[in-house]
Every structure is written in structure tokens, then in C-alpha cells.
Image (cartoon, rainbow, N blue to C red; front, top):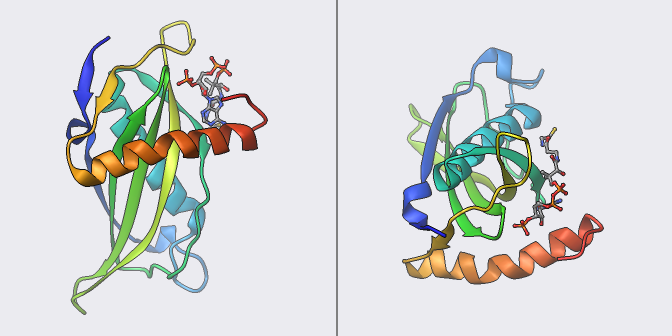
Length: 157
Ligand SMILES: CC(C)(COP(=O)(O)OP(=O)(O)OC[C@H]1O[C@@H](n2cnc3c(N)ncnc32)[C@H](O)[C@@H]1OP(=O)(O)O)[C@@H](O)C(=O)NCCC(=O)NCCS
């Protein structure tokens, strides 16, 4: 089975928060942010496996700071570890008010994707090679997170 470097799965997505993305308080809707996170993370997983992927699960996400209309949202996603047919992706989100020169980290999350073949069945993915210290940290901890999320989903790991 092929191997791929974690760095080759990096994805950066930038979005401008427009009126249609906000609630009545002019804050970005949580569902809209989850949508963008899912897209950026899915593209990262696709870069790793070169296949169609589906979202299998999303680990705990909390919204600590509101993101306002007019802010620029930057999402950075990267595969942390590949298992047999599934991949874990770490995604971080920042919100920037450019005129105020203020940029804050909004949230982060782990998404899990499964690669599917043309028949819609799970397909083995390449092994992921972590290189930097941070990539190795994410990689090593991913096995524990996987066990926890599969237990939470009522599956055997
Ligand atoms: C995810 C899905 C493909 C798993 O299919 P399955 O028939 O259960 O396949 P398997 O039991 O062979 O599992 C395949 C992989 O999915 C992983 N998986 C299954 N449920 C998971 C979960 N809740 N979280 C993380 N990974 C999960 C398994 O661990 C396995 O990974 P591995 O091969 O790396 O060990 C299937 O449940 C599905 O299609 N779900 C709907 C996906 C979707 O439509 N997402 C969009 C939301 S609407």
C-alpha cells in the first residue's frame, strides 16, 4: 500500500462572512461554519486517498467566540492519521477582522472520513507518514481518539 506525507494533505480555505451566513445578531451561524469545516476537511481527506470520501463522524465542537458579519474566516485542515479505510482530519478555524487588525482562533475539531470505491464500499487508503513533531503528536494520539469515538458510536475498534 502506498504511503503519503501528512503535509501533502494540507488544505486552507478562506471565506468572507456575508449577511446570508449570519443570524439576527450578525453572528456567523454555527451550521454554516460546520458546513465549511466539513468541506475543507473532506478535501484534505480526498487529497490523501484520491477517492470519494464520506463524513463518518465529527468529534466534539464548541463555539467559544462569535464570528461576526464581515469577518474573514480561515480554515486549515490536515489528515492526522490514516487507518484501513478511514482517515482522521484535524481542522482549525480563525476569524479575522481585517480593518481592526484582529485575528482570533475560533475553534478546532477532528473529523473522520471513509474512502469509498465506485460501488460505494469502503476502500483501503494509503498509510500517512507524519514528519514534524506536531504531526507525530497528532498521529500518536489519533489511535486513542479513534477507540473513543468508535466506542461512542457503539462500534468495536
Ligand atoms: C461511514 C460508513 C461508510 C461506514 O460503513 P460500514 O459499512 O459501517 O463500513 P465498515 O464497518 O467497514 O467501516 C469502514 C470504516 O468506517 C469507520 N467508521 C465507521 N463508523 C465510524 C464512526 N462513527 N466514526 C469514525 N469512523 C467510523 C470504521 O472504523 C472503518 O474504518 P477502518 O477501515 O479505517 O477501520 C457508513 O456508515 C456510511 O456510509 N455512513 C454515512 C456517511 C454519510 O453519508 N455521511 C454524510 C452525513 S449525511
